[in-house]
Image (cartoon, rainbow, N blue to C red; front, side, top):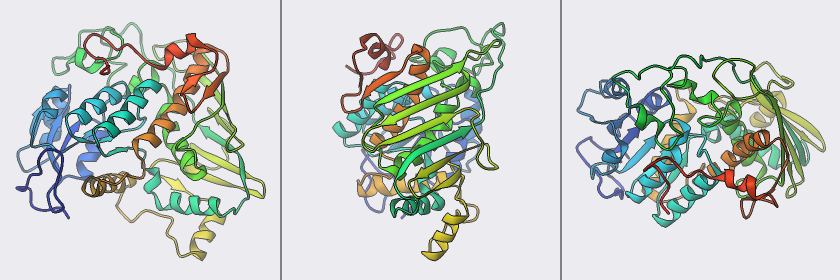
Length: 410
């Protein structure tokens, strides 16, 4: 139960009736929506863009601490847990540092930018006994719960193939648009562990997603949601593919370098399964993204996969027959349910539904797709060791040395 704002938890270990005080790192875009979801818990905001931070703090009728450097927020004894909604290249390092500081973590999807970074996040959660929830909120959509039960009861037989479709990566951005960063933005801190480069407004803020070395395109953005459900439905949270093959077209103009007409095929051995991702692919329903699950006795179409999960008619009938709801409560977004589950787990110290290992495995699928595209050859993947088989040059791309001081702890 949430109590009055004057009751503060301490040392990252709130008591059963304590308010869990949250610090929010990255409060533009998605980070703002998190402020709405757990507004009674918010104690601090942090952003390298001073305008973002000030606007976020101004949403409250009480004093909210403002930081520009996340390390200072992590040093605060009044903060129990952090919500990280920064660009993707910061997720790994901030999560590890938060665990070291004794804070529980809600980190946005995709969980990590590199495979080795994701494993470091999993290890940090275990070593420092932290509760981490990854922000792939689809698992908290009632429609997803119905679909999972529908598939696990064998309604379409054993699933052998999943066909995912998504609208294509955008082409654009002006490489000649390099300018001096605005005075409200700490550009060097925005870059952090990413490779150094001149400021360009077509990178920042949202458009980092369309750069392979910063965001990684649609497959890492919404693909993290679509694969999140595939992994949950089919029991893939502790494994990975054995082979990944990808192809795409290099954009002919603009700044953004994520491929168009991007296609990826994943082969699994246990279970025997093929997953195909295509941009734009064959749109199986009236929605910009989704997946078709093919089983030995039929198929089912899932529209969406993030906070929007729309089962097809046969699954709706299944839900009604089993007394299950398949739509969100009115006015309650799925990410609010995801955040609520995280807060509950902080108190109980149980694992949340989208724990760090699950988030890492889902992100790994997205990372391997882009890696196979960049290598221009298929990848044979050892999911247990998390290494590419007989390809040491490729294995060197599973991690990053970071930049300057921004390196994962050794």
